[in-house]
Image (cartoon, rainbow, N blue to C red; front, side, top):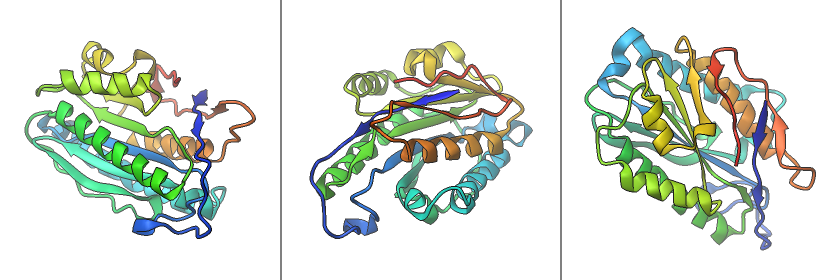
Length: 243
């Protein structure tokens, strides 16, 4: 399959390759990804929450330990984690994946996806400002939402904000649905071409795929085209990533 992505090139450079807040390799292209993680009560079914926790650990291990990723790649993948259910919690602001601390998530309550999406857009805006201040080039940041249901809060304003930022080439939003997620509702929030269905709660395979995708995009040559091919796991269906 193909992952499509264009880089944002900032022309200014810094002589030192460590910037404010410990951001490393600031003269190299970074890619930022926010994971929006559904922790509503229904995620307790079939131990989906436990398998999600395992997937997050696999994501860090896969990215940090993969011998095909050089140290620059590992330092230039910036990850943030937001959980939603019963409240919206910033589990971790942007850090290099090597500094990621996978939380132990628990399931309970409703699904405040609208609030989580707004928080994701806020921290992406802040991260892009940080890159710009340091003169760091970057790819368009990703939002990767994982859910087994649909929002039960006010999500319309967040949806409009996401669509506007996508139209302005400021962010890319993806959705991965598991079990009985509301396909039609998610299609009203996310671009239908970027909605996936994950079978068998195979979160480890999903996160290995995301790890490979982020690394491949980070290492892609912006002068050689705008797509790279990534093999998707068999349990990930309806995959069309586009910009």
